[in-house]
Amino acid sequence: MRVGLYPGSFDPITKGHIDIIQRSLGMVDKLIIAIGISATKTPVFTFEQRQAMLEAEIGPLAKAKGVQIQVISFKDLLVNVAAETGANLIIRGLRNASDYEYEAQMSAMNRSMSSDIETVFLQASPEVGFVSSTLVRQIMAMGGDVSAFVPQSVLKQIK
Ligand code: ADP
Image (tube, rainbow, N blue to C red):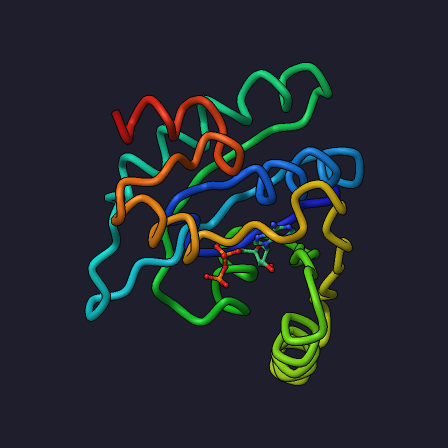
């Protein structure tokens, strides 16, 4: 069974994340979306809100493709999360060279800690490759319109 693990902050989930999830559904039998929670950082959206938004957006897509889906929280080392959940593939999105620099280093370190986990990179789709949760949060904080960048469930939550 191919089990994918897609980790991130998803604060909030964007159309860029949805694109990566949609494309990765074709590569796995089960997809675990792992929301990183940190004791020191206060997110804009709670874990429960992020979980509900992800499930609302991804549930129907996954069902249509016959892929099992699970949305969990984590604060542990990612390789430990992979071992605990039985994931054999980490999925990450690449938007630009700075994503690459960071991701290449992280995947190499993860592989040296756990040789049986492979990281798969999906190149961001051009239509959403510029979208980032950080910028969405900044626009939201200044009262701007983020409807081009986030899915319906997030817009509802913002309202
Ligand atoms: P982090 O907080 O770990 O940077 P994010 O929650 O922003 O993570 O994103 C999780 C993953 O999704 C990362 O691999 C990131 O590169 C990818 N990602 C984020 N936004 C996009 C986008 N617009 N297109 C493609 N991949 C993206």
